[in-house]
Length: 216
Image 1 (spheres, rainbow, N blue to C red):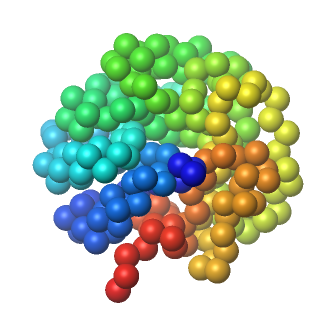
Image 2: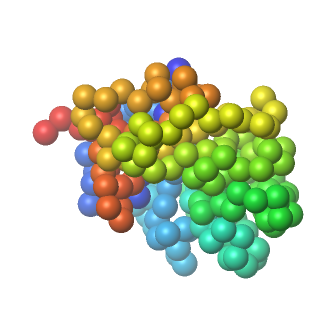
Image 3: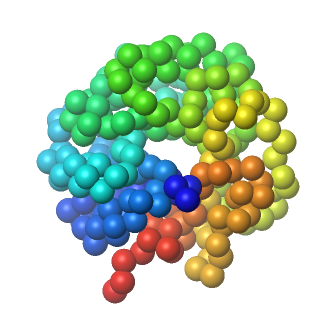
């Protein structure tokens, strides 16, 4: 089942074995988020271009990272990131981070979705980190309705999704113990896409899910 979304924010030259492990796992991934420089950066990165090519060859969906600062980042800046990910890394879609969840910000994201589709993005992932207004289901392929620690996740009860059934929900969990398999719990809570990593602190997405960690 292609249910694992991997946001791995480490440079390929620094963590080559980890990137090799992600590429090997390509058949069971929903997608991989490329984040060269908290976005696309100002110039193409040859190491990320090579990884993107290897991911696509292995059958993985490549998603470019773009921050939206909860609707405060200028539209043109986000669109530039989207276009650069497409042009430099042939990204098949975009992972928009720090996405607002309220109805009042929906128009901002609807414009971004229109721009992303116009740029050739086939997949749009919105990382709200919490359950958003149902309107966002109209523009996204995946909605991230939880991002947080394993301790917070265990305290979270089943989420009541009020939107339609045409969108996949995703949970991103960090600080997860090695012996824990989050997949079944995520599915029980309505998420058909997930990622669970051991990392904590300011940079949890510099670690891989236990099931993808390369042998040492």
